[in-house]
Image (cartoon, each protein chain N blue to C red):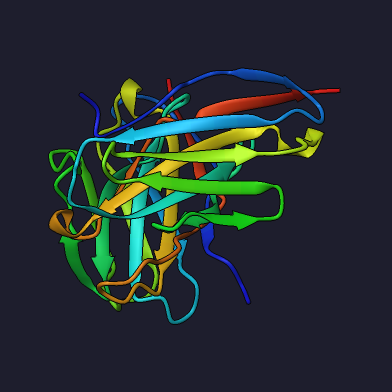
Length: 111
Length: 116
């Protein structure tokens, strides 16, 4: 089992729709969780940190479920510019704070 | 604020040749990372430095890969000799991580290596 698993997609979604990504992690000692965004042929950039209580930033909402060991990212009212690969990232104190990266979920927003 | 700088941006070499990549992190960032990203996969950590010391190099293929950060600022990653499977994007990232806190990694634009 991979340490961090994501649906590879691609998700083809019409503009304006709501889309949700899930990510599961295997290490119950994981402490910090992030969503990064990576545009085609570009470097990853932090989209959101994920807090235990859940957090929202505009059209983006991140949730954490420690009991089931998954995190989610919800994008509302999707825009063409949201097309990218979304990477789930997890870190654990017992791995020397090394970030473990999922393979990413590709999102394609269609006009 | 200047971002993470990397060079070269692109490199094409033949197998068994050697290659070196350079990274200059954001000023003041003590932690520096080298990642390998193969097409369709997430970044894979090769080595992590804290200042000029190695924190984690467990996934670095040490028979052919080496990295250094002698003065605790910029860093070089070398591959010698290269293999076809080394074709990937090599990403450098830095952070101002303080132990015990969440932190953001800032990435450079990467070096796209093609081994033929």
